[in-house]
Length: 121
Image (cartoon, rainbow, N blue to C red; front, side):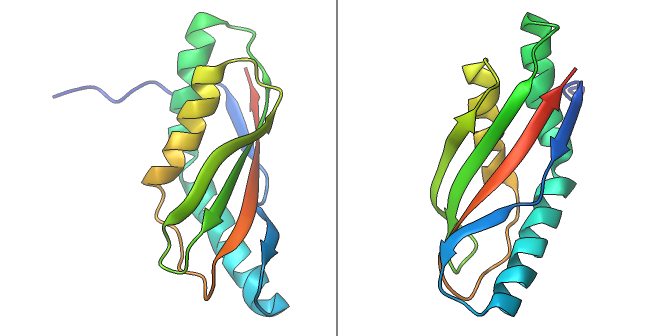
């Protein structure tokens, strides 16, 4: 049996915020809250990414924004790294890829969001 990958460091997940979309404010707020909870519940995925970076650079620290467009079926129309100060492209891409493993809610219509994260040793 394979051992789970190590987790390391601190990953602070800020609330995801909506960039664009067409829905009532109450629905938008509900979906954004559901997305934020889904991302927060997946923090171990991001800590595993960060552990790999810390193994290469023990003082690695920085911020990453993951930008995405969520379809009404809960899948991604777009998923990419946004602005980042974390100077490790592998960790940034791993964090983006981890989003594919998150079960996202199904919004009533497609909309764009950003999920800011802080990585600290």
